[in-house]
Length: 74
Image (cartoon, rainbow, N blue to C red):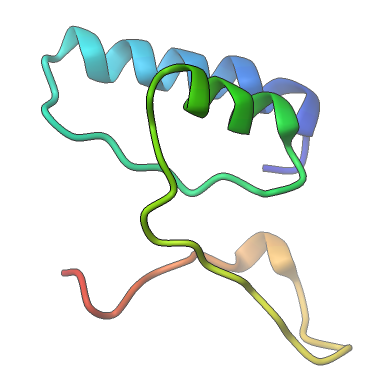
């Protein structure tokens, strides 16, 4: 997400939709630099169960085209 100022509201809306749909489990990739979204996750009882760190050499390219994916989960 390019705009960290709207991530909290977008994440809150996603959590509401998931809860309204009676989802048993919810997971999310949240940037560690967005304190408001991380605080919301913790306030809702979510926990960090699979921390990830993205690293790259300079000149990697366009980060907006990157989609995190864990090859262990299909």
